[in-house]
Length: 162
Image 1 (tube, rainbow, N blue to C red):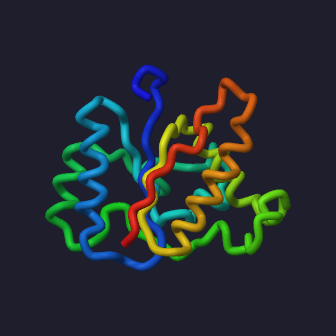
Image 2 (cartoon, rainbow, N blue to C red):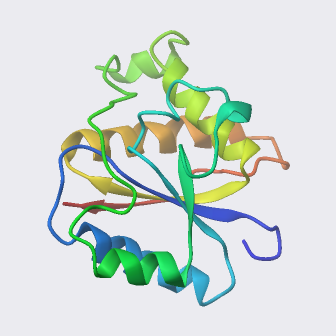
């Protein structure tokens, strides 16, 4: 990832969870120590499921996570990247739905953002719906990257249950 100048994205979706900042800091530290940039999407999927990539703004839709951010987060009672209950996979109920462009539009928009922002890996934190969304992102990303040697995000996801 470092050689390709890719970043890692972290997001928290669903309701709040005790220890969320510790998970974010612990995960981010592993990459930051290796000089791989880390960003956190603010409010989980809320913004990235609906905005075009060029409309995302630092500080409003995502933050850079660095050592100072991690330290502040460990001392804070509020989640440093906040959370929301936005669910981009809510319309996907069966495997055949993954082939329906209308039902997968939000996930494809997220993947467009990952490509635009050079996100090479995602750390997803949340409950069952967030895990389900991570699985759908993985499946669609894998399909999109097949035969595309220039794909930035090829389905590297780690999910942390809350």
